[in-house]
Amino acid sequence: MNTQNNNKDAFVMEVYIKHRQELCAYIISKFGVDASDAEDIVQSAFAKFAELDGVLSVENPRAFLYKSCSNIAIDIKRHNKVRHGYSAEVFELEEEATDSIGPERANESRQRLGIIARVMWAMPSRRRQLLMMSRFDGLSYAEIARQVGLSETVVRKHIAKALEDCRKALKACGE
Image 1 (cartoon, rainbow, N blue to C red):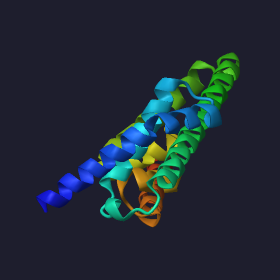
Image 2: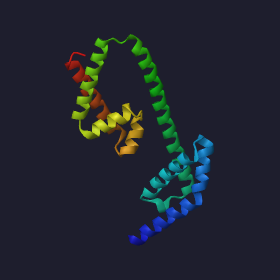
Image 3: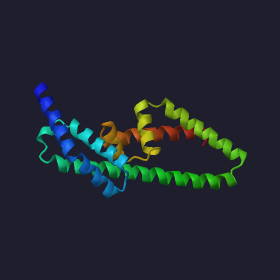
Image 4: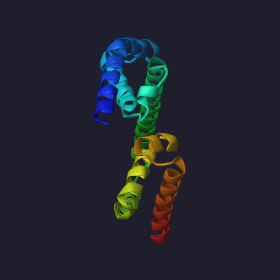
């Protein structure tokens, strides 16, 4: 087993040395990221590659890594797009809201936020984590499933349960 690990490590290192610069250049040109971000993407792809059980049997490591790098870059772009879109939307709503919110409405919003916060902290930590990844980080169920190592169905069920818990708590308080 130790010889196999040494072979695996040597193979991954050889592929890394051979393709790292090429992959970084590809990511920079294809996705318009800076060199530091490209390096992070390539590192992530190599980390996934190195973790593969059958890494020694991958027929075309270069193609595998190109695809992995592209997928990671696309995920990052989507995440940033959602986050920036959400930030702009929140900013517009805040500007609009500050013009029309009176003290009564502000107090009501604080109360609702407090209810949601209490419900979230009462949830199992995994469920809370998945809800936050979905609603705060803007990740899709598939992206969350990949990151945490669960099936998309399990992620979907946890988030649905978390949202239901929040709805029930708000309804119970007359919201």
